[in-house]
Image (cartoon, rainbow, N blue to C red; front, side, top):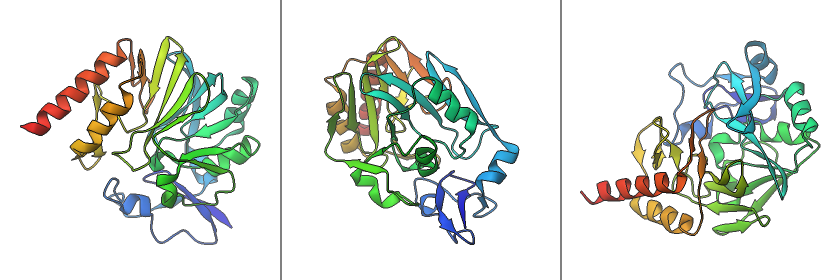
Length: 267
């Protein structure tokens, strides 16, 4: 029995003897099936041509797949007052990455922003000692493998500790989650996944229902994000991939981006 990984989105599926016939995540209109058709890899095949980059990403320990694979997100270790959080997840698990996390005190929980980054979350949970995987219940249907360690939360605001709060932004996915960490490396820090995607200029964020297919987010969802984030100070915004971060004046960058998007929606 093998847990096959989708080559295009990087999601690991439940154990089976042959590859799945389809990937529901790629067939959804927020994603796409690869131009060569639906293709699958085993974890072992992925490891033959890829490795994990482990190092500093603007003050936090980052882990990412190199060369780039599927959706090129990176995971971050957040040493918070709640405990060490692995924010986001990857398709490939290696002993070196697990050791690096263990040397920094291990991981209390894996928290993932949305289904595009679920990847090999079950394998990571097992490798880290069976730690819980924290997801918003609105995205429950997108889980493709076994979920014994998944813990769901509901509502729009989930304070995990004095410094860490989960926020259901929605828009990109119904349960799209941002993490606000009041005591980040340089002050209050927002980790928005793709609910707010840091732009390439690293001075703005974008709001899209589908990034690869260029489908804008509904105006009502953007207004919800605006209202939800309004009470929170933001110094930095850490984007979904390595180095794609807004360092300093994050509140102004988010507000300016919200204003720009909502103004364009009126025209």
